[in-house]
Length: 342
Image (cartoon, rainbow, N blue to C red; front, side, top):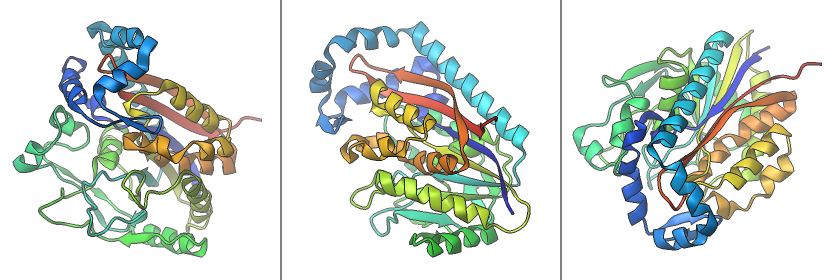
C-alpha cells in the first residue's frame, strides 16, 4: 500500500520571485485597480484606503525598503526549508494541488476538478506576445516558475488513472486530461501555480507527478470550501488504494489573502488548519474567497487529508508582503505536516 511521506503547502505569488525593490511595479497597478476584493466587497483603491483606516500607518511602515527586504528574505528562508524537507522525504510520486488563472482553461471548458494524466508535464516559457499581455510587474517573476529554456517533468499516467477511478467510486466527477488545451488564446504548458512548486520546492528535478487542478476562482463553477474539504478526504482514500509501496508526497500551492491582505482572515484559516477544525474552514463566507484569495482553497484538500491521518501542522512562516498604504500585496504562508508524536 502507498505511504504518505511528505505534505507541504506554500504560496506562489510573483512577489516571491521579484526583488523587493521592484515590488512597486505591482503597487502602481494596485492604485489603478477599480476592484479590490476585501471581505466580500469590491472596492476601488481610494475606497479601500479609507476603509482600512487606522491600519494605514502599519501598512505604510511595512512598505519601507528595509522592511520589504526583510520580508522577502524571510520568504526565501521558508521556501528553502520546504525544499530541504521535500528532498529529505524522497517521495517516489508527488500529487500537486493548484489552480489555473485562465492560463490554460478558457471559456470553452473550465472544469471544477481536473486530474492531469499525461506522460510529459511541460513547463514552457511565454513568448513575447504573451509576456506583453501580462499585468505590470509580473513578467519579472516568470523565471520563478519556469526556467528560461523551459523544462519537461515526468508524469504518472497509470497513477493518475488509478486516482480518477478511486475518486469516481467516491462520487467525485473529475475531469481527466492527458494533454493541456492548446490555442493562441492561452499559454502552453503547466500553469504557474504548479510551475512554482516544480521550480522552487522540487528544484526542477521532481519524481513522477500528478497535477490536480481545482477551479477555486473562476465563476460560476468555483469549487466551494466544503467540497474542497470533502475532496481531500476522498483523495486520502484514493492514495490508500494506489498499488505497490509508493512513497507519496502531496504539495499544495497558493494563498494566502491577496491582492488585499487580511491578516485576521489568514490567521483564522491557518489556526483552523492546525486544529483540524473543518467546521471553521467551511464556515468562511464564499464571498471572502473572491479574487485571488480563492487560492487558499487549494490548501483545503491537504488540510482534510491531514486531519484524516492526524498529522500535525507546522507553520514554518507567515509573511504578509505589503506593497501599498492600503494594505495591498500578497500574504505568504509556508507549512509542513508530519505524524504526531505519541
